[in-house]
Image: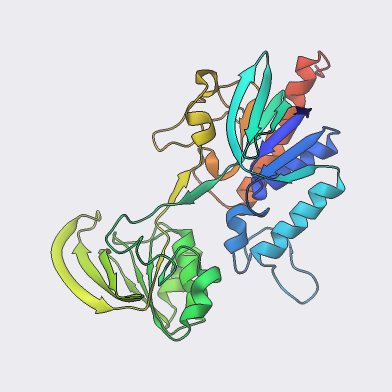
Length: 327
């Protein structure tokens, strides 16, 4: 069993930043990521709202992929170790967290930062699962180029929906953004950009009830709603080539929500981990940062800041355990 000072589960912007700050604090840091470092940031076409100039020269803002690569290499340069593996279970014995990996191996540390993020919420309608990968997608930058010039429906009213609709509007002049309510919840700058984009048709008070097709998506069933998103019964079918879904996120807390009862941090009503301002959960030594944490504003810059705070707090926690806390 390999032991570390700090284990970080997840390597999105929060986890990558935590790895950098933890390593800079001279901690022996291990970051676990099942997929590629970057998390949801990998799907960002243009990272235009990160403070400062993250682009170089005249190239402008970077993509989420390039930005994530920079964070990854930066953390490694400070000594953080990365492992591509799934995190299966976590328990705590005698003040030490024991993490079981997908390969059956165990890693141990007295402090853990959960930066597991969140996954896309589905619409849970007929045809969604059947046509996933054949017209239904949750990533515009991944699958948008397959539908150049086609009729594309986008579902959602938050930052992600507006941002992805903007991207898709550069590929097709037939983008229809449907939202179940009468206004967007996205940031005003993003919402206004969508509302003034001639390639995007916005339909408020509308939901997709069903996705139809044969080998691929060919149509959607639409229903009108009231201002609160409740169906009113006006239903019609409309031709479609693709449906991109951005209907919110589900926090990835399974590793602490089940199993060892001593590792059940307090959650809010929607399942996000509640922390204090130091990113500390209700479980001593367990910290949370990024999209898995209860926070009113989820952005890359926020996740990065939370990751830095979590690493700093974890370092202070470890100093306190060793009786070396600065007072």
